Length: 512
Image 1: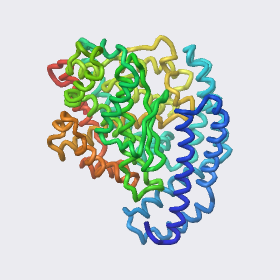
Image 2: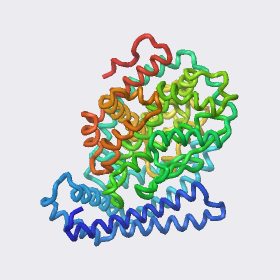
Image 3: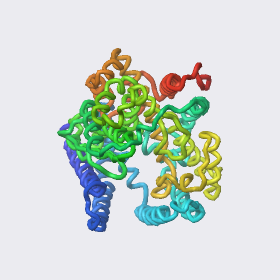
Image 4: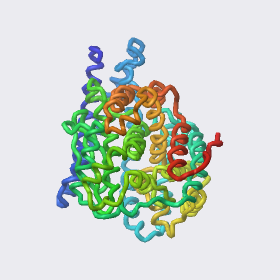
């Protein structure tokens, strides 16, 4: 960091914001893990206080004046150096915080709380009707929010840019069009084939043994338990309080062998990213993952590309079988490999397999865009949902519970920007994997030996250590030699599932 006195002031202010956010995050982690039920009301009050303190400091006019003064000095600094990167990020976050009036923030917060409560009551009944006026208001508020940022060309660009800086609706549409054209025929071909055996996944698997096996795998991956821990929760997540304290959670079902294991692998990918950020960035907004999509690329790489691969199961199945000798006595590693890669047309996004998952994301994104553009009214959303599920996945929900009401995202905030990063992360996971494989020619062999140090080291050097010092595009190009490109991911899916399901020729490879 520069010795310039104004930069020292900026560093201290940014570190305070970082720490306030971390304290709020710690309160949230405790709420999701160990908080006794009686503590919930006070915890809600405490969380609100931390959010208010953070917002006050994030919008302090003195911070704005400090940024103005530093920007006058910016030509004297290396444009790719820490000072310039920090200043640009601090300006971006300050402008986003101050562009939106406090009255709007309060209005949105009150509406979101009421809408979430109504959704929680309405969803079990499966009728979207009562939610229509509330979601119409959400859409109106989302459009009002976008209007605070008139520099964006499309009304949903502000939401896309918030999670993937520099990304636009037009670019996501183009990438998703190529992805959908490749996926739909491949899903149709695969689901026409017989399903592999999966009955053994749903036998009784005691919790403690499941947790111990998953922890052994992520220790081998490189998750550092001296700077992290794993706990149980209802909805698995990763949370970071500092580079030296990055925690994950998982959940266990004793009648499903895959739930705990793949949640653990997924969250460890997020956590290893945060643990791998260069320590010189500690306490700054630069000390976190580049974007939601890049973050998701790391969780999906370790969960799916590694954890659902044939070499992984060749190595780990004997240990799993030794852990559960009675349950897996009649199972081979090949059967396990096929079972954890089973493809099924499904209604629920969070339960979807690796092949069909992105279709769930694409249709949600396209419905969001249609609402923002005025081509789809909220009252017609449920029908549009059913139509797209029938066309893309060949299934139709019996009611709205597992249709338009299944995801909480639109009922707890604004409409837009909540889904696209999941699919972008899947795409990027293969770009990083292919680049790593080019640099590490025996990568599959190392996975087959349970050796992950070389892969972890490559990712730490090319992805993790940079934090937010590079944009998504800069990071991708530097690490892989190309910008966002869905073809490596589509080729991976065609090859993997073509072999698993005995397809005699490539499917969907003629698209774009």
